[in-house]
Length: 248
Image 1 (cartoon, rainbow, N blue to C red):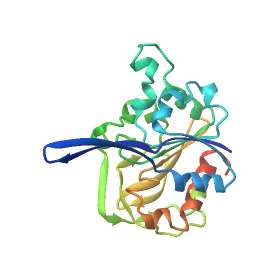
Image 2 (image 1 turned 90 degrees about the horizontal axis):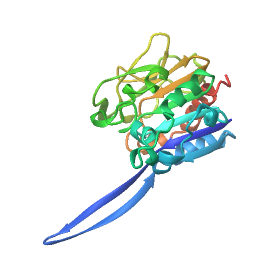
Image 3 (image 1 turned 30 degrees about the horizontal axis):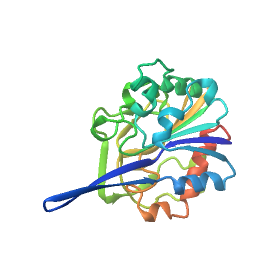
Image 4 (image 1 turned 180 degrees about the vertical axis):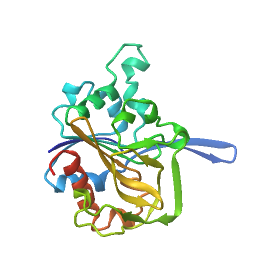
């Protein structure tokens, strides 16, 4: 399959204050290497767009998205996809890419939204997908405002639908996660795994396509080393991608 992953990157600006004087440094990092490795290990073709490139390079129309079997959004807020530079800086109309993504799934494509501070509604509600066409596509209802559940003590994922193809061959419990976005399943969707009393992994359909909501991170910080290095990690993501792409 051909898979598009957008997000999972960030830039950091640090102010170093040393008494009277200060200076700044910048850094850049990406958090997708475990997820990307799992997808590639299954033989899929992966195109990756970090957030700063996705702003202008994410596909604009359903026709542009058509070459892909599945699209994964991870820790990338809705504003990044709604306001490319042409719109934000130059006031030039462009297609609504979230409407295009909705149509892509309705016509048979797959969408996976992966949790984080800028996914679902996110920290302070800033991801804001609940007020976009993506809310129709997801198999979950989004909580208004800040939807994070921080679990520094660890929350243990538990499989509650072992018969679902995504859960095939996975143990009943997984290594702990350190937080997730609080979501509520829609009628007709399937909660495959929970974290505490909340859905962690939910699957559903929209039109002719499929969607998956994974409420925690695919990498740090909510996914600690014990999770990303877990021997079931690759299998989990490979089966998510395979199912959402309509291959089982």
